[in-house]
Image 1 (tube, rainbow, N blue to C red):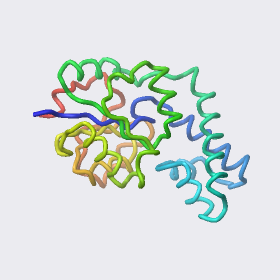
Image 2 (tube, rainbow, N blue to C red):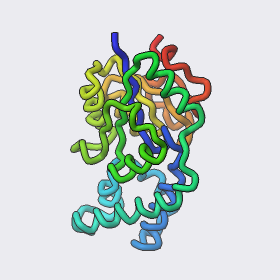
Image 3 (tube, helix red, strand yellow):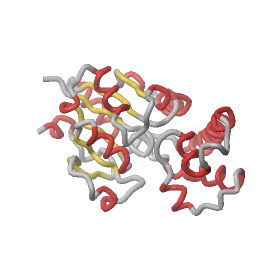
Image 4 (spheres, rainbow, N blue to C red):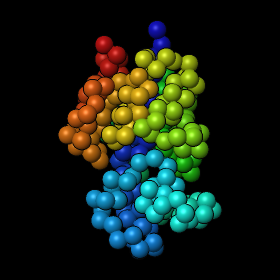
Length: 218
């Protein structure tokens, strides 16, 4: 029976969440005067960029066009700062190659916009590993809604029960649980204790160096 891996991207394939945090911290405080601590900004970093702005400022503060421009400005700053450091999390390149050889299908289910997905996949030359790429532009509702993972599973032609999600955030693990999927957690941004509410986690790892793709389905 066919199996599949579905990867979140930021913090899961590339260890870049501190650069996203810095980008949002500067935009929210220096540009928009929100007066937020880094911890408060970190807590809001899930879902689509526009959803983050609405959570912080309310739905009437910005027009859709203004939110789109703020989102793109944040991503431009993020990419400029992160590009010199862009690399896969240790062990992931080998993990992808072994999974491919084992016939495990792979997809991406991320809240990132295509601008950032293309930035990562094309600069790292790994797009060919993924048969499905579902981004923020492809779903109506963000994690913890399971739509992003269910859509990836559908595109891969794999039952949700036969998919394993790779995530770094509690909201992502919750989305996997809501999709009926098990999860592997990368502890790049959040501590193990922050996932105590979830019973769908197979293992916690700092990177991919100790993971063996076929063993995860045992």
